[in-house]
Image 1 (cartoon, rainbow, N blue to C red):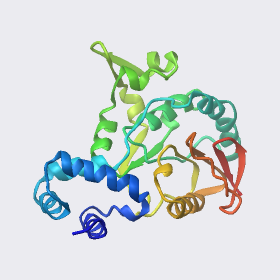
Image 2 (image 1 turned 30 degrees about the vertical axis):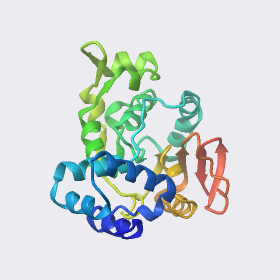
Image 3 (image 1 turned 180 degrees about the horizontal axis):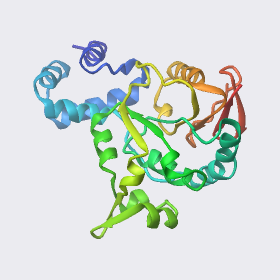
Length: 257
């Protein structure tokens, strides 16, 4: 079996379309994983994936990119707090529908809850948080993080919304956890939520081809209400935003026209 055949087998097994990823980078990562597990080629590895649940979960986890931290790129979060939240509340009221797409281990949606609670009562906040990877969603629901993950989060949020566990770990309080609904979702295949006031999708789309990126940005646009905001990562400025029906209101923030 060659890599093309392997991609087809992976899609049949996982519904993950490897054609949407940059091929050289992804093939190199997969070949390294196969070699680490001491398989001789794609055929043997696919056979093992079909019968070994642990190996299968490891593979899916490996395919998805899970680099996450609270309050990543603080300047952008400050812009969100100073300008974007007030705009959203003035435009759409206090019952905001916010989607954290490709949320990884939950650092981002929990950061959204904590920062938004400066503007709204906690019990009025609801964040939809999705990721393709079941394992990271389990970690996200558990809400347990190490010191490194929370090091960028302003101390006032750590003190107010987290409990220190042992020497180096922090547990997100239940009142914050209750404001996030975690669901499995594949950005390339599944239908998108509708009527969103803001979508946050950061540091994930960079791994996709240009065609897949544009498709995702179009789908996000359809998901947003008119005037809704898309917040992207620090390496993901959208050059052709006008073609995709957005206006750029600030670096990394785009408004649906």
